[in-house]
Image (cartoon, rainbow, N blue to C red):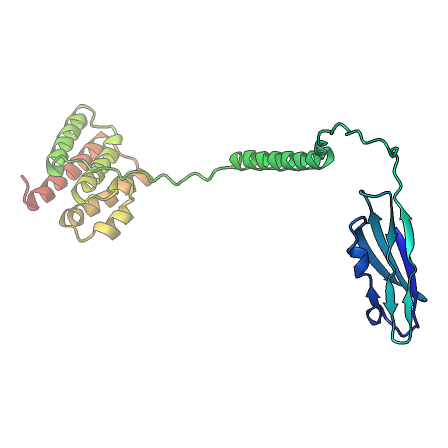
Length: 259
């Protein structure tokens, strides 16, 4: 390494110094590996990294420096190249294979740990998402299909069966309620409405304009009065009441054009 210090005034900067070192870079016996400079409070310090391979000794030419108020120059210097080998040792050394690149264990360990943590977190979130309570879609119940049989024929068959039951057991109060069930079943089949679950008031409000309902509505109300406010009745009164309901139903049915 060659170090040169050039004194400078405090107001002078590195750019104000003219360095004539071109002859140093033109030498064949010496190669300049690196040139560096540093401005200190008192001077400009120059550093030259030198190396030589051909000759064991050489001469460094003078280097000139010019500042705004001064001019400097180094002297001719003798330079000896230092070597660990003897001068007569010209043996070629065996070449060594290139060293393998160092494996960045710590760097790859950090990357592997980060990837593993992300994978575990993703697996945990996926399992948690799978175990979440799923919202079931509302299943629409199919509409209850209405019977395709003729409602008037069905009504006649039901009334005929009720007559037989009344004849065999004239004192059974259940025949009054069964007549109301038959009437609601007929309305269900005739008008395609859920009359089987309607009250008499609902039937009146919905189907009052129906000719059949208008003629039989009073007897539906009478059957409700008997069911919800029963009075002391005997076998004859139950038989007569149910028979009257059946006759009025058949009469109203005939007025609607059915026999």
